[in-house]
Every structure is written in structure tokens, then in C-alpha cells.
Image (cartoon, rainbow, N blue to C red; front, side, top):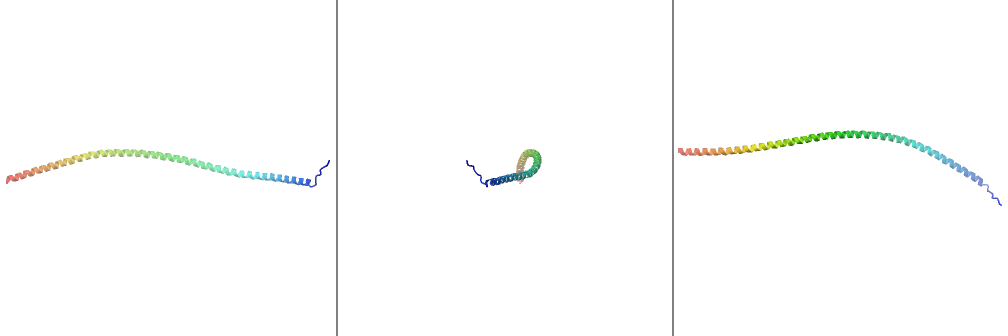
Length: 147
């Protein structure tokens, strides 16, 4: 049988390959550790920023709650004022209607009185004219009778 002979360059090539593989593994490990360290540092920064954002969000929400409560109080006050004004306005309208009805009734009474008075004056003027006419006739008759 023939024995296979291994050339002399194979051993050193395998050794160099193993060193390269080992260096690659070390490089991968180093990069992994560096990436892990950077990720942890970035996550810490992100956590601090998120904490700041959370605190600011809480302040904003508290301000919104206060504004909402203030707005609700203002709305209640405006509603109460509106109801009061509406009630006063309705009472005022009722009073005006009542006064207008009274004024209308007074107008009717005054109108009737003025009509009656005008008719009375007209009747008296007619009576005076007739009386003056009678007096004139008597005077003419008396004047004729004297002649």
C-alpha cells in the first residue's frame, strides 16, 4: 500500500488558518462586547430621556386636568348666569306684555271717551247752530214786526 504523503506547506497553512479564525473570533467577541456596551449606554440615555418625557407628560396631564376643571367651573358659572339672564328676560317680556295689554286697554277706553266727547261736541255745536238759527229767526221776525 501506498502511503500518502502530506506536503510540508499544509501544516503551516492550517496553523495560519487557525490563527486567522481565532483572531476573527476574538474580533467578533470584541465587537460584540463593544456593541453591548454601546447599546447599554444608549439604553441608559434613552431611559433617562424617557423618564424626563414621562415627568413632563405628567406635568402636562396635571395642567390639562386643572384647565379642564377650571373650564368646567367656568362653564357652570356661564350656564348659571345664562339661566339667570334668561329668567330675567322672560320676566321682563311678561311684564312688557302685561304693560302693553294695560296700555291697549287704556287706549281703547281713551279712544271711546274721545269718540263720545267728539260726538257730544258735535251735537252741542249743532244745537248751538240751531239755537242761533232760531234766535236769528226770532230777531228777524221781531225786526219785521216793528216795521
